[in-house]
Amino acid sequence: MSFKSFQFIFPHYRRMERWFGGIAQWWLPKQPELHEIRLTTPRLTAPVTLVQLSDLHCAAWTREDYIKATVGLCLDIQPDLMVWTGDFFHSARKQIARVMPLFSPLHQAIPTFGVLGNHDFDDVLDELLPLLTGCGITFLRGEQRLLTCNGQPVWLGGIDDFFICKRDVPAAYFEQDRAVFRLLLSHQPDVVFRLPEDAVDLMLSGHLHGGQLNFPLVGPLYLPSPRGREFLDGRLTRHRGVPVHVNVGLGYTLMPLRINCPPAISVIRLEPDVAGANRHNVDSR
Image (tube, rainbow, N blue to C red; front, side, top):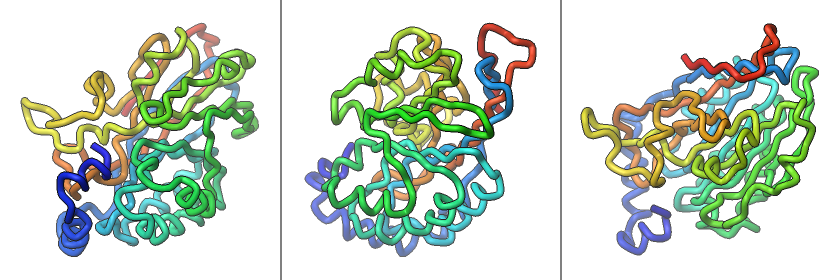
């Protein structure tokens, strides 16, 4: 549910958010967890480390000490590349202006790319985007870049939120040299079902928050995706021959509460296939 629709139902939501912001410090975690993912690929000859952040939803309850702890954890990892998979906006642009500059030391130290999520389109993009790019994030909006990560060529592509913009991944992305590792960023994981078979070597997404409210036996109360349960285990899953990882997110939608789904940073370690295998091997920890 977007902020616009929720605000229609609860017209005083921003006041409730400020109230939550004052008391949530008593139960919110001091820092996110680290989820480590490993992918072996024949398209690399040296290891490459990625860090993925997603779904921060800058809100009144987003604490500066939590952000500084997140930045510290990411810097300690010393990744070759940082990526964001959308949903920075929650209910007010002023929260992004308060929170996102705290990430500047991280983005200045490590090349950082990102895509937009559905909540980001709740705001005026012409005013929102300068706040995000100003802290060092380069956005891919149906674009692709050839990067060098630890001496290795990597094609990086990204698209705006599909269910808002209704634009598929440009066909030109799949025409790139298949000897080069191809990474795709999409806020919505369901985009994988619209890709050709074996279209990319890895897709990174967010959106689902890992369910956010997960109850024993029942599972998540709500998922913003008809096939969301296929991506919930927090590891690499394979769909149409494409390995997909869905980050559980750093923030919260609508209320600052998670059950059996703590916020997390994803650390993706791409490792060369020294045996020269013709297929990917996946492992998650």
